[in-house]
Length: 47
Image (cartoon, rainbow, N blue to C red):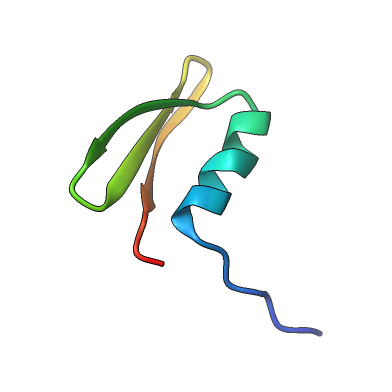
């Protein structure tokens, strides 16, 4: 099995936005994504 590549927090946000998530706010280095029918996500923006 191959290794997974690292992606940045901003790249992860773009991917989750395709699945219906919306940027809610940012607290420090964590981006909070919200979707009405799905759990709220906290994405670290460290890289």
